[in-house]
Length: 95
Image (cartoon, rainbow, N blue to C red; front, side, top):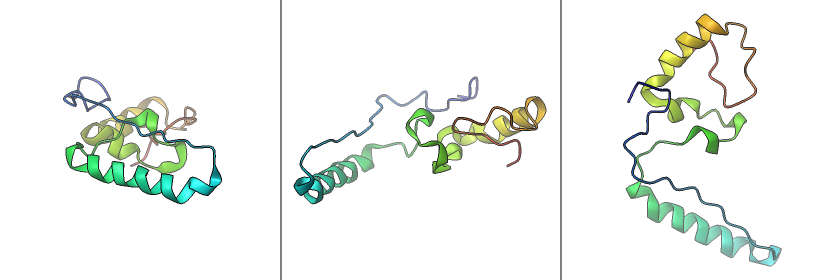
């Protein structure tokens, strides 16, 4: 699983919850069932996160790249020490 940056090659499924509704009066109800669904699915999750599903400012890159993160930091330090390419879910050149 270290041939590429993406470590989640053994996951059989990927799930990303996108819930939407139009009536603000339903906010509490819809947020509640979304959270219930998330909690119900959590026991079946690997604990990983797909990097393109996290907001840039979330700071979850280590969770996305897992055991490959430190190697990516080394590569970033070598090839982009000034962090020119940072407009993404950034791996900074320092851990």
